[in-house]
Length: 229
Image (cartoon, rainbow, N blue to C red; front, top):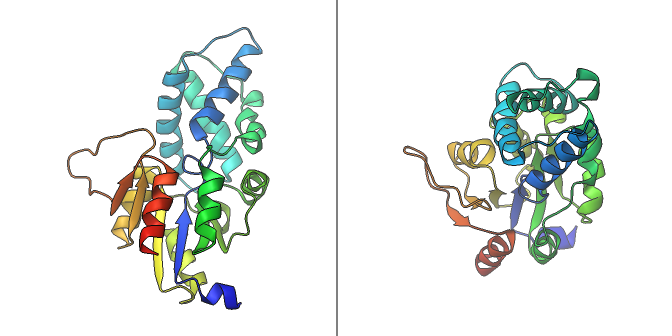
């Protein structure tokens, strides 16, 4: 408890896309599944379609993330001309525990853990995140999942629940994430300092608010945080 008391700042992270290589995980899973029937798919088109499909599905009534993955997989496949049978749509959930961390993830998290409390706010089921944590071998101070709040970001439930659990334990809170839509915009709406790990080099659209800070890698985010910790 003494070590925790010395940490005046908590950092919450999105997991998939920020810490775990989301694009490579989805692309690899689609490529392998398509190859089972001798099919090749345009992976860039799959990723673009998947992002739109998943966001639309998550706007509806809450369903477990395994179901979201399956529905979004079928939607994205159809968008690239592949009528994926429903009984095979679970391949994304099956592969998700194998998706790897970015090379800069664990070195950056280890540096930050020495000075800051760390948390994850993720649009995922508890069991899937538990499997993913094998790639993130740290003691996390806070974890909030979609399953726990029955809601998907960009809705605010993750941050509201995180604030409730913190109970004033850390005076400062910064959110760190890659997805502008799922994380940066809603965290800004809630008045949080936000670091946008803009791994894809995206540009803001008209009317979008800039993040408190913008970097290209998690290593750069760690440098920035530790300079002011």
